[in-house]
Amino acid sequence: MCDRRHVIAVVLAGALAAGCSEGTTEPPTTAEPLSAAESMALFEGMRAIQSDTAPTIIGGSDSSIVVACPLGGQVSVAGTSVDEAIGDTLRLVSEFTATPAGCEFSSDGLQFAVDGAPDVRERTVLVLAGFFEHFSLDGTVRGRLDWRLDDRSGSCDIDLVLRGEPDLSSMEPSATGTLSGTLCDHEVEIDAQDIPGPSG
Image 1 (tube, rainbow, N blue to C red):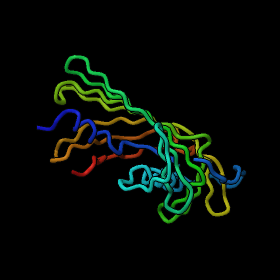
Image 2 (image 1 turned 60 degrees about the horizontal axis):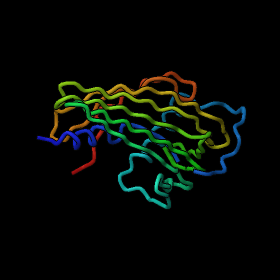
Image 3 (image 1 turned 90 degrees about the horizontal axis):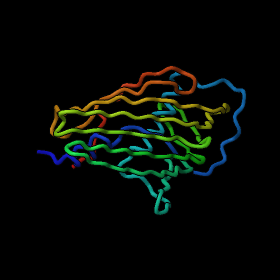
Image 4 (image 1 turned 30 degrees about the vertical axis):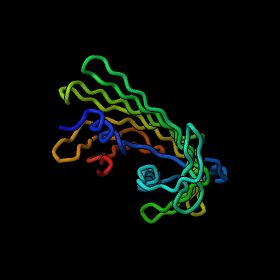
């Protein structure tokens, strides 16, 4: 039987995010805004950087780390995780802030350069009673990014809400869920099926 804290760590791993620390992306212009598909490519590209299991860490402090972006630039990530146990109920609150700085990456065939305006903030709350007698996984991803794509540039506001539930159908617990809300002025509902936990 899985230890409850191991299950919680696995379920929460990869449950969102975005981000990259000081940069030089050009100021927003009145150029054509991102389409819905381009907005998704931007978001998924940032998620890929945060979910990288072997990131290139180039700096940091006691409260944050700085990770190199795939094609240049960096992302500074700071966060906290606090758990509280009352009886057989465990509540775990995780909060992270990601600040991109000249972060360059390719996603869905598009090459982006991104800066925080000022950053992207993620909050996840997990409540577990007993051994999944009751389970809730909720969260938000909010913030603003300045982006550059070819000869276009602009800003992308992010306001997403996560609703999730456990998936214990395999040997390694995970979570399924949905991110919904506004992404770069587009209403979206993103399927977050089979959010994986760390291997091993």
